[in-house]
Image 1 (cartoon, rainbow, N blue to C red):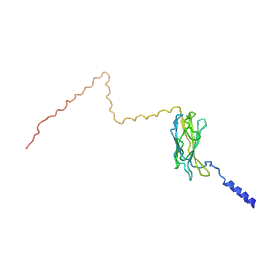
Image 2: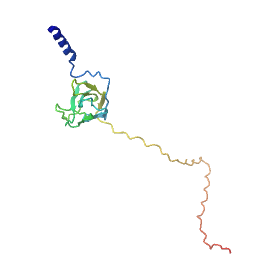
Image 3: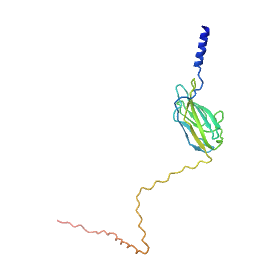
Image 4: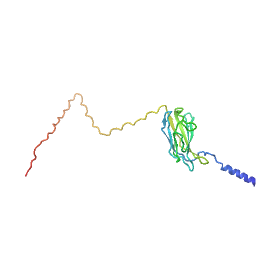
Length: 198
């Protein structure tokens, strides 16, 4: 009997043991955006949430991974609620924005430029802080690092809507000049006493 109960207890413990972070098999995909999408090596594109990172009793914890064009991970960092990292905001409602730049282990910007030109991919996860922890992915976004950002182009001016009168056609060579109309003399007012009858 003791052996049977011991075996049952060990089996139950194995069933209840859950991994600390889920494998993100959820069907849900949160949405984020990034702007601007083209920057110089010293630029700071802003990655921000469209869907809030807030699930059940979880406090929002955002994990951002930035990969360079050559495949090197240049940023891999968690951002917590009410963080004091410069350029990072994560509020208790689950809204967040992260200024993408190279940072040290304490989350402070290093001021170093992005190491190479090309397209950087950004992967973001909303990680719940309750147990077992779950990782809910955001959509993948990217930005491009270029040597110089081209100036913004202004749209051409719309065509004028005021009607234009066609110009008089030029006379054919050798044709007599068209007569010039006489200009009437300006009208002169006639002042006289009005006629009264009766």
